[in-house]
Length: 406
View: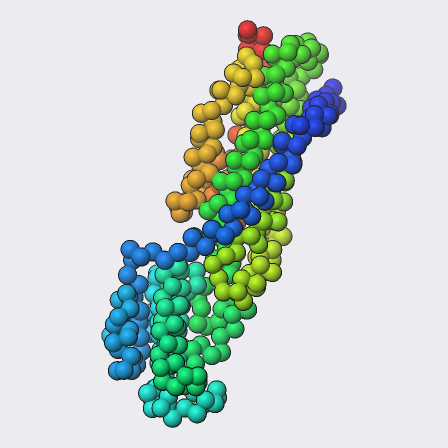
């Protein structure tokens, strides 16, 4: 009896791997689709960083020269030239919820540019502090930089009268001038899109194998052979769920591989120099711990998905009926997968909600904000709910009314 569970697992694996079309649909297609989809939409990802024109960005300026006052007044920003705390402004820049810009002209800027001789060591440096993680701050930085460069060209083209952020090193992800970083920029996009895509692929994989394995055997009458065999029903239920979870997990791993390969395709909307840096560094944004957390969440979510779909399939009379009965479950799962787009900050208790907790954990990993307690709550609840589905499936296998209904 000890090997009954693994006998069921081997039987399901043999049936699955023997069917080439099913293997392609469940294992190959998810990763391939993710890669193709992200390759196709990569050029449009820059829209995630478009400026919100409904918000007026405040621009704080220290020691603004009188001759530049009209030019700055013409900008579509809320200009503030006095009465502000520089330290507080810089602190706000580090908060991604604040869209602003801080420009600091050096003392004696007007006299310095009048006597500049083009020597880089002698020309004044205009400091512009911004946050590249904020679309509005980044847009304001670009606009002000262009304005200053145009102004310099009117003085003595092509003379060098002043510099802007002369000591900035963009290949290190930003210096003191840039409060944002590469991980925040990419992570915020990945956290919005990838959990939804992963959940969709996992659910599709479960729907491809679970109804056929349980409702399909009821429809063909082969489930009767298993049920008359002298075996504990809990081992039969466990064998079904483990085998189907293993198959569905292959789909999850395929999706995961497609994600990793398609990450560089999502880097758009930046300067050529920075784009090259991001494309080269994207795969290094996440550590081995991040990948482990993500895989554990995927695995436990697969177990829960398979458990629920198996229970529905055991209740259904045939495969078509099982697919119809899982539609409400699909709606719930899809609704949960969209929650990262709402930007909600879930509490640890909220991670007890099936699928919602899994999606929030995935999003937190992509945003580099994963913490231990929500992770443990999600994994523990997923395993507890899966155990409940095994108990339910065991009882259903023991009920002639359920298993032999026509």
